[in-house]
Length: 67
Image (cartoon, rainbow, N blue to C red; front, side):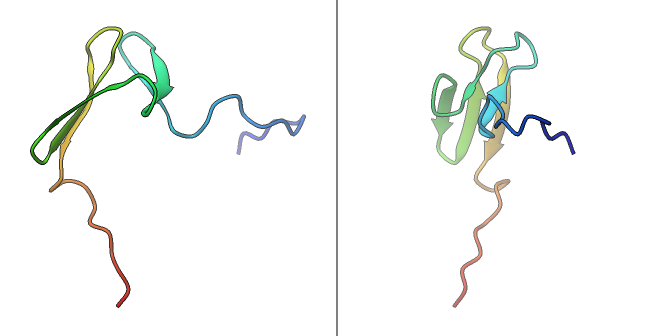
C-alpha cells in the first residue's frame, strides 16, 4: 500500500491515462483522440500519435444484468 502519511489525496484521478512513448497524461475525456470504427475503438496520443489502446466490442467485457 502506498498511502501518503500526510493523509492528503493523490494529485491525479484514477482515470488518468499515460502515453508510454512521450509521457503525455490526461483523463480519457480530456485530450486523448478516440477513433471509433464500427465495433472498434482506438485511443491515440494527441502529442505523438502513439496508439495507446485498440480493442473491439467483442473484446470488452459484457455487463451482466440481474433478472
